[in-house]
Image (cartoon, rainbow, N blue to C red; front, side):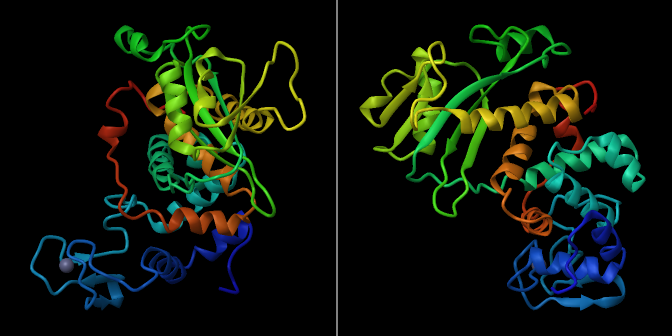
Length: 318
Ligand SMILES: [Zn+2]
């Protein structure tokens, strides 16, 4: 694709042509050829005038567009709007709020909020593979999330110490090496017990590797399976290779995004924002077009309804 866009402006112009948008979608969604999302048949008939296909099998959704079975299904919005939304969230360092997106593409804030959450599903590309390599592990509190929560939910989410009114996220950063950037795996945890934190490490790091943590007692016992190196932040922050600066840098990016762009985040959705930041961090060496393609090629097989998204919250407000 020699005319592949490199900037937001180029992307907007490029995808203003419905045929270009259609072809891009088909190429990335079905790299090995179009098949029916319902039954998998590949001998489907293309109806060019409608940009749809017809399956020869007898089943519901016999006629399908490229949106069927993706995060775009049931959305009345045209693909060019979706593509601009993906471009923005995949590439804006600090994320993009539903208010900004709504203004940029001319939809309501509520629609934009829903779009962004659907796109975050496609950002769960699972690109973190458990493997060797030195790792840094750390946990952090994301603040001020609890003010709108119901009492029962507060009690469930807020545990641990020092974090009243906050939710906790655990992260593991695998350090990079020759041409390999470091990668992060992160997600919400319910408490900071040894079982929880060490369990997260074991799910992400092969035994025998070096694991760097701070002096939190919950990390004690890691040396049974790992070369556990501890940096006591009461004493120092770096000793040779022993530090957790990589994962702490990720926390500051995450917090900047949440505070600066999303202002407040319901705990129910915190993992989605962590996913978004993790995606941009892990794919940071790619260019804007590369990150856009990564997300667009992962839109199939992931759907969520507005009801599911909002089942625990009073409003969509970030
Ligand atoms: Zn079929």
